[in-house]
Image (cartoon, rainbow, N blue to C red; front, side):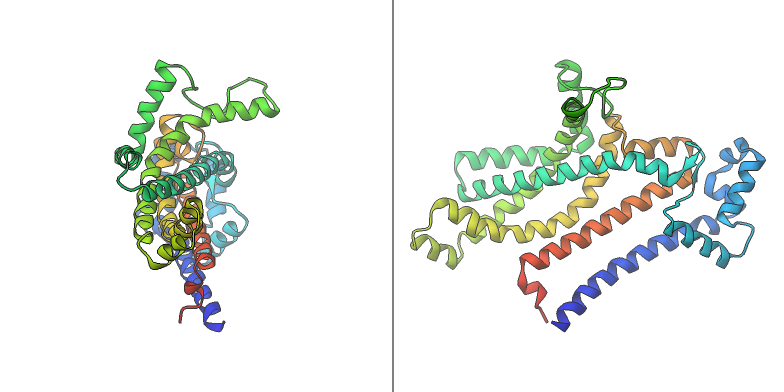
Length: 328
């Protein structure tokens, strides 16, 4: 049990080191650039438009008139207070600006991860169990075709077909402005706005999970314990889901940790295409305005979210496979 605890602690320590490295780079890089540190943080154009009072406030906030050690202390204290700096474009704290967009991105990424995983596992189990049948061939060809398309391209196609041509879904936004909707009506409105960007992410991500599950099930069906279970008279449903499906979850869980960064990256592009008010659309606005503190804050928050999600996936894998927990 001591080895088990030390391995869990070692995994957590690795994520903590990665997080501290990101914090250090976020602090050091702007200050290593030539010229005025404030100019490196905000850009020359922003300084031209700043009032002297705002410039003096930012110098005091970042402690740029003090030594590096004092600046580092101020930076760490600000992070512990959830303060990521000041957005020149939005004229508000970066943390406050990001928190307005973060729930929409988490809703999009979280639902796409859940739907693609559940649908991919079920379709993969059914396809692997019916290998070489017509349904297997059609699923394999169709999902591989969709998985090979870029998410932003598929998003544009869905937008043109279902938004422009058929006018079934809204073209942009997350809610209808000035609609005054509440309760169930508001939820339905959010769902209609979410449908197309969610479909684009799910369809692109679905193929990888489906193929991994299918190939795993095909391999598991040849194992001795599957032949024994079949000989004992287990039903097809029990063979597929209780035996083959359960064992197929292990590689799927491992792959989920690798999918999370890809989903966040895809969501950033999808949000721009659909003008969905998440971190992706905000990041584009920050890039256009050269609002560097906001850019750094978004990237820092996405990195922390990805690291946390990967740590969570590692813990789930240890629960699913006792061999990992008690390995020496």
